[in-house]
Each structure stands twice: as structure tokens, then as C-alpha cells.
Image (cartoon, rainbow, N blue to C red; front, side, top):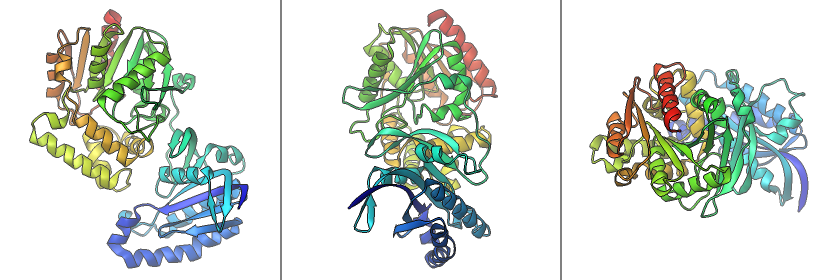
Length: 462
């Protein structure tokens, strides 16, 4: 047994099972040729050593992180050219993860956290792309002309600390810069009642607003997303905005025993305590509306007002509606079969539901958000919890000023659910916004209208 510092490269073929099912003989023939003519020779050229091969990939080690990265880029560029004539759904595309760490060499294999991190990086990489850890990035930027995009910090299985990740992809669009306010954000961690570590952050100045958890969060990545960045920046421009990643995704603990409305409320309590909030406005979007109502009922002395956007009190499975049940079942199938997939069938299902009027850049960002912030298992657990929520009776007990906003053509949460929320909460105001998306996107009329209503409401009650 030997321990030493090494660069670890781990690669696999994206969608391998699907490719094999469609053309097993053809895939195996091409794969064998690429190993003999491209991949193995390149690894040897850059002084690497293949530790082992799997059916759809390989594990290799290099003495130099620079060599590992150069090798990976060359392989991906050569593979792209070789597969250019194949149809989009037939292409063999590798995902590659590279990490530099302390590795244990034993009986022809390698072990250790360095290998675990490389495996997580591989899973984050786009098909045809490369993800590297921050320690690798810090050793190579001045020696390699290729551009890597900062993906923020990510969780790694069996490793307590998040790791910062950088991504390279062929023909990648220009990196979107985070708004200036994001540069002041510092991620912190607090402990929920059951010991779960919750990542939270606070930015901006003014009357405090706590954002309840909603489906899929990543408090670092969201700033560079056209899906969330402008929306959060506008909120932070007029308020102190406190947000956190719900358990099971983002930078909070992923391996958790309990994902439930009660645990979400406990997580909110932990963040409130850690951030020093005394009295604040509570903002809930989508299922976050139900969590906000639960928190306000339990802690009315803390909540100055509620702002509920695109929300619901009843999950789909509590509405006694066949269409809602069908959507739930179809969504669950899509998550199980194609979470993070590049197959457009899966991507288009979610993007056409959540943001049908959004430009392609926003669609792509939403796809990536799904891929990097959550596993398919946790996504299904969160999805199931959301669809079983029933907060109608609790809503009737709320005695704080409440503003309910809903986009008219929302396909994820029909406007009737927003109207029901306003009827259930005594004295709630209801505002209908134009559009068809589930969220307010910058550049669309509902974006400015949303903040006009929220500013006026917070000025009176916040």
C-alpha cells in the first residue's frame, strides 16, 4: 500500500445504457476504436496511467494536474470531431472529472477522497465536457488557454465540506457574470434540529426578508443563472435577503433521512436563529408558500408579513384532479428515467412546463440547475413531498398581512391555486400578473409588476 499526491481522471459515456439499447454492436465497435486510436494513446502521451476500465469508462492517474487537463481537453475535442456525423441521440460523448489529491495505491487500484471527488466531478460534467476541482484549477489557468466556468461549490458524497467546481465544455457560451451584490455573499452553515447541515447566506441592506425553500436551490449557482440571478439581485437591492438551500440539494446536506414539511420548518427555524433575524417578511415561491404559512402559524411573533408567489396550499395529489395526478406521475417518471439527461424529451418536458415563454439561454440554465444541485433520488423525494402538501386548514389561522401574486398562465401551479390561497388566508390581497411562466423573468412585464407590488406592500408592512 502506497500513499501519494496524484491527479485522478475519471470518465464515463453519457447515456450509455440508452446507446447500447439502440445499437449495441455499433456502440461497442466505435467505443473500442476510440479507446485504441484516441483515448489510450492520449493518456500515454500525457504520461498518464490507466488504473482500470469499466464497461463505459475508465479511471486514470497522472503525476501532473496540467497533463491530466490537457489530455482531457484533447480527448474531448477529438471525440467531438469523430462523432460529428452521428445523430444527436447516437453520439458517444464522455463526461470527465479531474481532481488532485492524496491517493492510496493498493494492489493495482486507487482509493481515497481524491477518487470520490473525481467521481462527483464526472457526474457534474456535461456530455462532452470536463469538470475539475478548485485545487486543479488553481494549478493550471496560466498554462492552459482554454476557459473554465465557475460552477460554485458542490456537495460530494461522503465528504462533509463542499468543493468548488470549474467546468469546460466545447463551444460553451460566454460566462454570465454574477450581479455585484453577489460578490458580498458569504455562505455559512447552521445545524437543524435533527443535525442536518443547512447552507445559508445573506445579502443586501434594508428591511429583512427570509426566502423559504422552493424546488431546487443552489445559493451560489443561482447568482449566475438568468433564471434566478436578476430576480434575487432586485430583491436584495431593496432588502436584506436571507436565503438557504433546502435539505437534500444545493450546498446543504444531501444524505438526509427526513425530507418533510416539518423538517423544512425546522430548517427555517435554524436559519432564522443563525442569521439573527428578529422580525421579518417571509417570501415563499411555489411550495415555499406552504412552508411560509406553516412557519408563520408556528411563529407569528417573528413574521411581519407574507409574500406568496406562484404558490399553493394543496399539493397535486390533494386536489382531487385527474390532470394534476397525471402531471405528477409523468414528472416522476421523467425524473427517474432522465434526470440531468441531455435527451431533449426530458429537458423539454420540464422547461416547457416551468418556463414556456423563456429564451433558450434560460432553458439551458434551468437544465443545468437540475443537473448540478440534486440527485434524481432526492429530486423525487422532494417532488413527492411537495405534491402531498396540505396546508389549507393552517392557512385559515394566519393573522399577518399577506400578499398573494400569481402569473395568469402558470402551467406548474394553476392560478386557481393562488386564488384559493388568497381566499383561505384572512384579509390576503391577490394580484394577477401577465404571462405563462412559473417565475418572473427579467425583461418580461410580470417582472417589473411583481416588484412594484412587493415594494409597495413591504413599505406598508415590512
